[in-house]
Figure 1: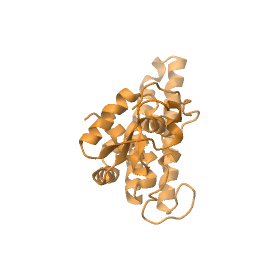
Figure 2 (figure 1 turned 180 degrees about the vertical axis):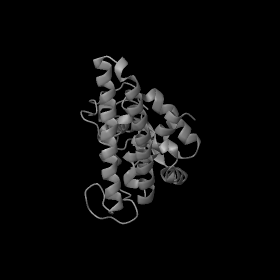
Figure 3 (figure 1 turned 60 degrees about the vertical axis):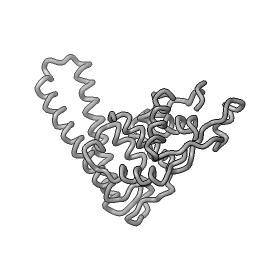
Figure 4 (figure 1 turned 90 degrees about the vertical axis):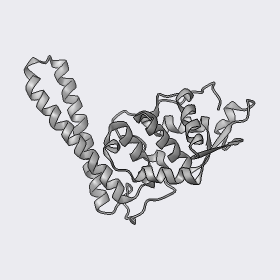
Length: 225
């Protein structure tokens, strides 16, 4: 399984842990709430869902769940995907993982989106791992810039500076999050216990905060699932 497909499976399981959904609604949530999945289609989602069903982590049921399917009324009955007990257990196992993959750009964004369902100690390990990874990246960027500064034109130099500033901003953001976790505060600044809220809407914190990084307007898709 590729890293990209693994991230998608993780996100689908996380969203379905909140409630059953049909393909249209799943795609909409992935597009608008989890920025890392903005550019993908049913052609990517459908094989993922089939794999999860084959593994016994999802079951398929006929019918509609919400009014989100209203624009598609009149077409064949939609398939609703529901998380099984085995799927929930598998997702919880994925949530507990804190290996190097959890620190990479796309996977970290997806992991962070489901921090509301993640225990505090795991959140801390993922945040600290991500910060360490970015600090290493920043050190390499600075060293590279120092070696090549004299050979770069102004625009290339400015682009490299912009990249460094982006990494520096994320490191500062991670520092703030880590400090809040150590102080026992959630993102709203209130004290919480050691366990995560199970009913937190993951989309509220989906993706990484970057200036001007707003979801594109959702567009209808003619493909039904």
